[in-house]
Image 1 (tube, rainbow over the protein chains, first blue to last red):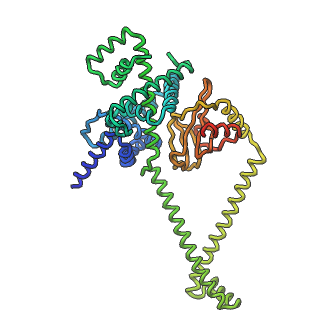
Image 2: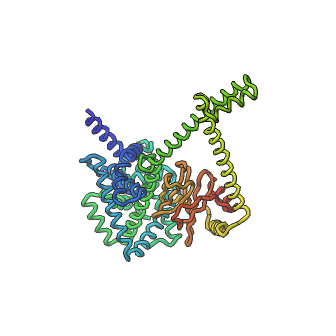
Image 3: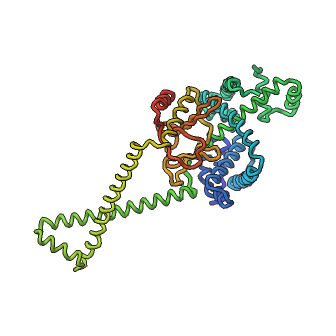
Amino acid sequence: MVFRTSVSSERELFERICKGDEKALESLYKKYYRMMTKMVISNSGTEEEARDIYQDALIVFWQKATSGNLVLTSKISTYIYSICQNLWRKELERKKRLSSEEKDSVVIENNDLEERNRIIAECLNKLDETCRQVLMYYYFDELSMQDIAEKLGFANTDTAKTKKYKCKVKLDELVKTLYSERDFLD
Amino acid sequence: MMAEKDLQLIDGYLLNKLSRDEKTAFEKRLQTEPGLQKELQFQQQLIEGVRHERVMQLKTMLNNVPVSGSGNLAQGMTAKIIAGLLATGLVASGLYWFLSRTEDTEIPAANSSVKNSTQQPISSTADSSNNTSGMVSPTVADVQEDIKAASETARSTSRTETDGKVSKPSAIDQQIRVKEAEALKVVSSTFVTSSREVITESTTGYNFHYSFSRNKLILHGSFEPNQYQILEFITKDNHVYILEYKKEYYLLDVTVSKPTLLSPIRDKNLNEKMSSLRK
């Protein structure tokens, strides 16, 4: 009986996450916080690194679930735990690499990427809240137009599609203008 | 500007939503149309930027979720200790109140000599009831002494700090003034809510401090969620970061890696500029 309840609540949580329910993500975050961060901390990570890795893992899980690219064959915790392990292993390798001579080139590359992301963030900020969310739900969460329409209160999927298109065109224009102003075009 | 149909094709290609045939045809076009290739590259950067922002948004959301990790265990412990101290204080106050009431009720009935005689056995521990009073009274007195001493210390500390600030404008003050003046030159109406991740850390023992670590801003202490925002001002050769917290502005230094006290911007012009920008 207890097992059944736990399976069904896990299933329910997963379904809510697939629909892009952020409250469900928050519940999940709280539920496994200790378990996941403990793994990193006991493997020579700091509390901050542990939280960082856990959040990254959870966001990977979230993106896969919302985009419909995840068929869960194990418990949610098992899945997230394995992502945490992989991410932490990669982070340890990255740290090791950074202590060698590659450091400088990596920094230059990151600066470029950071600058680009900063410009895009600036332009996203100039859009209204609905536009920002439509674009994020579409390009990151990869939610269906139906789910986007429901989340943002659009009349139907066509309205959501039109909105997404208009917002995207606006963002294109803004970013292109800033790119040329800051000599950032290739 | 690219045709709507081509933009949709690029979108579909980047999100892996094209059929195999559509994908092959699109890749063929890419080889012969440099304009399309350039647009694809641009759209890819754009999508990456949007995704990056969403990740930051989700992380900020998660950072505001109270969790029961070790950090919070420490908070729990602190809460328990405070609760314990409060309880002890409450018991002490209760006893003090009870004893004062007993004394008060006794005083009118007794003359001064009687009062003295009742106080005598307290120190000489003559009988059991007085003995109890004897144990409690010094404790209450001690507590009062402690409070008095603590408030004196607090007063003298604050006095010293104030004196220090007023009488000695240090080299650090000068540096702050220079930095704020430089920031004023950069601050314009073009600002962006920074994409830097912000973490609030309430377990480091610092209050109202900040530091930067691995490209993230860490706010040390108890900050009310959704009350802070990092504003970033960008020019070709300079970046200025300003923290807005409860309508106050704090100039941040990205090179700061150790927890540093947040102090509000003092430059009047910079403060006015910020207030007018954020209206």
